[in-house]
Length: 92
Image (cartoon, rainbow, N blue to C red; front, side):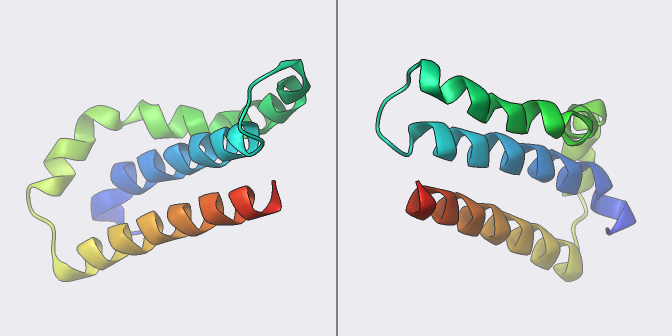
């Protein structure tokens, strides 16, 4: 993990957990009690979610001086999230 964008990448990891869980819940087009076990993903990834918000106040500072390598890392992470959500929707 790039040290200069550590908080940004951790935030994106947390968003990935939330997005994949949301995609799993919404995959059938409805929300009901059968979706409760799917929330287990949030609980099992609590440490990722905790890290995602722990340094959130530093994300804007990290964006102030991004270099090409950091931008590429962020884009790759966003593409990873999109791919994971698409896979979850396809599986659902």
